[in-house]
Image (cartoon, rainbow, N blue to C red; front, side, top):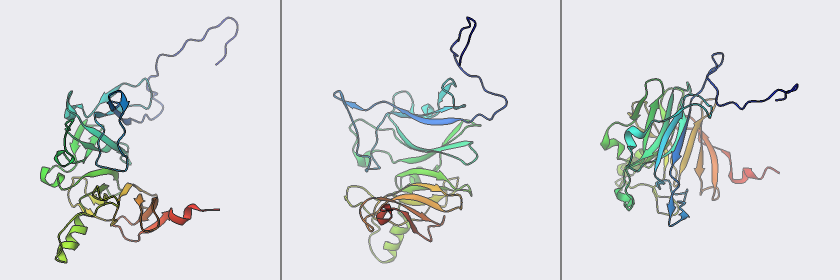
Length: 259
């Protein structure tokens, strides 16, 4: 801005909601920086079960620094419990947020004893926070991360459940074991879909390593990142129909060399 004639400029202290425009909420994860003896702790991001607590999901009703923020997961995480949160996504109508949360976690907890990653949803208008899969038994069948909304209100996510893979093995008279990643230190996360109420869970992708961060393209197909050993080590983009059929390599492997 500029002024003349001896004028002055006052710095603004905030911005009120504009009645002539639509305001959009924003959600984000706020966490404690993990330190160990003065050094920053950094887990291997390739190991998806790992946690970096303590975290909470915060929401601002307007995308403005001056908009008040509120902690929407504190009702679950409490003041002292340790939880981790990641993979925040928004519904197409902007009314709900969905994310992965794990906890409560202890400082020296063994991986096998820690709770599973689960999918949670927050409704902005009603201020309702819920775990999508309400049954404790079904929720503990695998780690669930990276959720995204589909156009028909179903949810696609990445999980170690591997329901169809294990069922095929049992039909063949084999143990229904979980596929492991190339490093053999973690079960593979592959794509599953479920209804909005957490029912009708079924597997739609089959990979010996991770299928991650699914999203929906404008033509209705799914796109995601695949840790791909078959076409050369690396992470590549794949697409498929919502039911997992018509699997296609979209970008990666040799297509990186565009000339």
